[in-house]
Image (cartoon, rainbow, N blue to C red; front, top):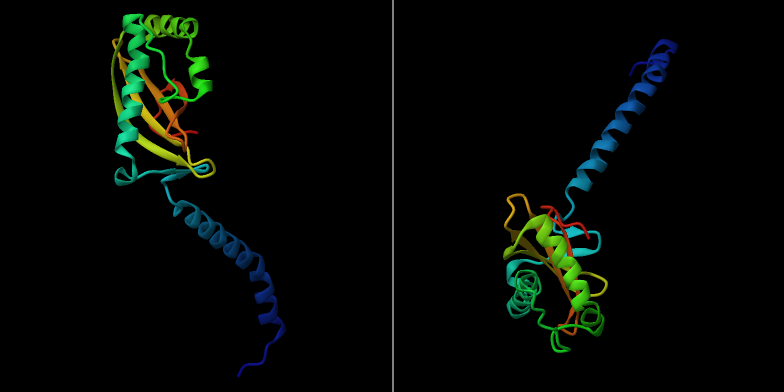
Length: 171
């Protein structure tokens, strides 16, 4: 066994700052690696539903209602939602006046409504509401909109939202 002399002790203490930096770097890499390994199907309190976990009846119902709502812009005929389809709040907000204003904006900016394509569904972990994301296509080439149909636990349409299309789900 070698005795520890002053020279070797000084070497160990001089190395300490470098070792600290190396340990901090390794710790940072470890933390980043753990974060990147998180479940990509979860987004801020929402869980992406696998195709087999989606209620196909509910999905079809939201697609039909979504097409009905957006087709209003082409036909100028609003078919009122019923209490079997939507909450009182949605029914109250889906007025002829409001739809006329929205449709005027949509037709001016995007052209006629062409179709709706289901993309994905997310479940809100707190409320159990299901968010159905549809891509709405219009006449104009670059007019891609997202139609979000939110269905509550009672299987009623709880909200309808229109947004610019983004490939990533942002609550």
